[in-house]
Length: 72
Image (cartoon, rainbow, N blue to C red; front, side):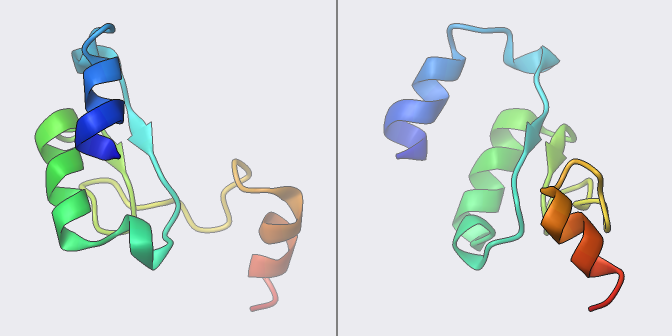
């Protein structure tokens, strides 16, 4: 999906100006996936194992997630 659809679609835009942010789901943070995204976005990757970690208790998360993280 990433190599066949997502990255070719990005070639229509200036990838050097884009940041990619993903959640910490284990299927999204497989080593092969992270390596591919690092190759594409460099240091502009916000992810569980990326150069920029997903911010804890981020207000960018859904309100329920944001509220519950303080209690977990």
